[in-house]
Image (cartoon, rainbow, N blue to C red):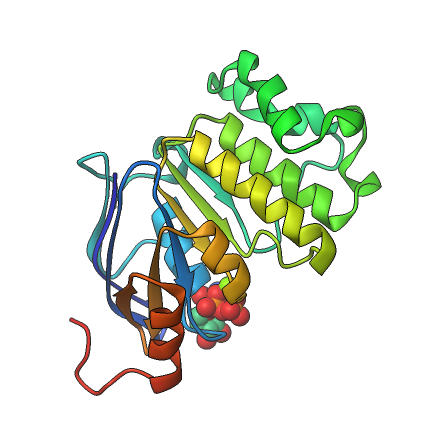
Length: 229
Ligand SMILES: Nc1ncnc2c1ncn2[C@@H]1O[C@H](COP(=O)(O)OP(=O)(O)OP(=O)(O)O)[C@@H](O)[C@H]1O
Ligand SMILES: [Mg+2]
């Protein structure tokens, strides 16, 4: 499971997180909601190991990984604007982790089928639409056999019609994985369909919610003074 404990983070003198905590069980998808600039992507970068918190801990499967570099964490990370390897085919992008000894080649067919990537395996990323690039980024993260999955607005480049179908496919793919997942989105419709639980980031603090409506209500009201840590 994933635990984020009382994480604080500043970029120079700009404080972004001031006491963020959350738990995610194996197989659970926790949706992170919050206004622009509230620190959602920063939080994911901290869990991925790209940024180090000023205070607090990140614990994966009972192991404190706060001081471990990204490559030692086995985290599957789909950044807000994912970059695929432009010179590699879709198939080689998805199975990239094999180069580092991670991932099960037998899993490829299932992922490709679930995300409907079969016709695109030999293409290069720049021949794909944004929605298909999102699918490849997710497939690559899932293929690497991660202990934690981080998805930062993975469907923000996808048109509404395609999104209906893709949300279902993403949901199924995440369900199939045992890894706890953090999923950032601004879209309540998407949040409701993909999430098991919700955390709102407001004024640098985290507040958990059981439903999207409760989370949105939290966002509307803003953070009461003194709320949080
Ligand atoms: N590398 C950086 N250096 C300095 N400040 C940064 C850096 N990255 C982000 N920030 C600032 O930190 C704050 C949080 O940024 P972050 O990207 O985590 O927000 P977010 O919640 O993901 O926003 P959005 O919804 O727009 O994606 C913002 O005020 C942003 O300007
Ligand atoms: Mg962001």
